[in-house]
Length: 404
Ligand SMILES: Cc1cc2nc3c(=O)[nH]c(=O)nc-3n(C[C@H](O)[C@H](O)[C@H](O)COP(=O)(O)OP(=O)(O)OC[C@H]3O[C@@H](n4cnc5c(N)ncnc54)[C@H](O)[C@@H]3O)c2cc1C
Image 1 (cartoon, rainbow, N blue to C red):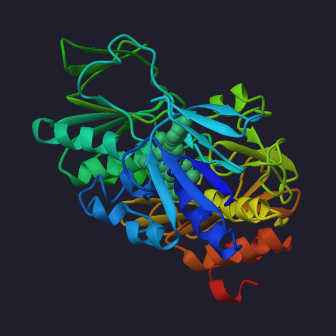
Image 2 (image 1 turned 180 degrees about the vertical axis):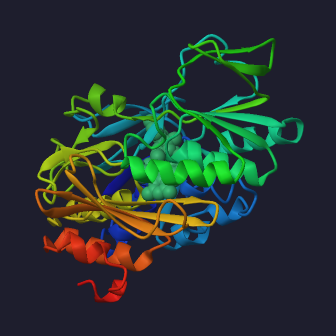
């Protein structure tokens, strides 16, 4: 009898997993169950090119439907509400039941919502999936003033895209600078300047206490008494991993579903990949949960190998990107815990520079704005455990390609 692998979540990880399963010679059936209406699609453009109107819905698909047909992957739209590990069975919200031999958890994350007065008013949006963006787009023709709550990457990308659509845009950030959780103060200063030059108003140290309006939002009120007029609000205050199914099934969960270096959970027949997982990263020597497409893809490759009985350890360097205006930020590594920052280029006046983060003399991360060569070199240095003199990195008279 043919064996079946079920993938929960039509996600970035799932798109890679289906391809990798066939590459690893999985002969059995593959059933992809997702609660969104579409096959896996690119999520990053949602706050960038798609929201800015530069990309169509069709262009979001990671692979065309013919790709899945060719791989003999079936798709079922529905929400899985229970995993029975003893019977090897999943149950959907509509009561249908499917048996599995191998199960892949690729459920991603969901947005953190605001528990504030007025949070359910019309015109208040979040940004995680296509439906969220089409909701924003439906409000755009009537809207003039947008308030973005949260000055992280998604908030800033949304600000840039809405500015491009001709809106008045205000960003409210609770911390004393944007991108505080993920970058050095110099990088925050750079992005504040870029947005202000584009006409976006950034206000920091702003704790939102209320969204006011009758049926539609009209203003955003902060705890210090300041108020901002808004007929559109987009909230970008982080995500929560979708781990409840795994937890109910008795799998180990702590800030993500725990997986080993082969992306296997504590049940040998269940793997997990993407934003919903927590893994031990050998490069950084600690457990972590990452929210990025490269992580979802790389974990999916390891998970597919594990399903096919092979051990492919996950050893990828974390990397990310963010597009705002004409700026492509590429981030290699993780800067948390850095003790020295070295900057190459003039971040105070130019639109291109690289910030290198060192810890105990070793490069651990780099934020590279319109600097692809510095990004590639940083990836090599960090993942190879190589050493580099910070003074060399700073010296712009040494061409980037000669740094190593
Ligand atoms: C607006 C935006 C911009 C981003 N920009 C970037 C970027 O520039 N660079 C970058 O690297 N990353 C970016 N990210 C993050 C990136 O999109 C995520 O890291 C990536 O999507 C994670 O993929 P995943 O495979 O873990 O799951 P996801 O892509 O999150 O998909 C999970 C899917 O599982 C479904 N699901 C959940 N539970 C169930 C269930 N019980 N039954 C059925 N289906 C279920 C969900 O509805 C969803 O469709 C961005 C994210 C957003 C929202």
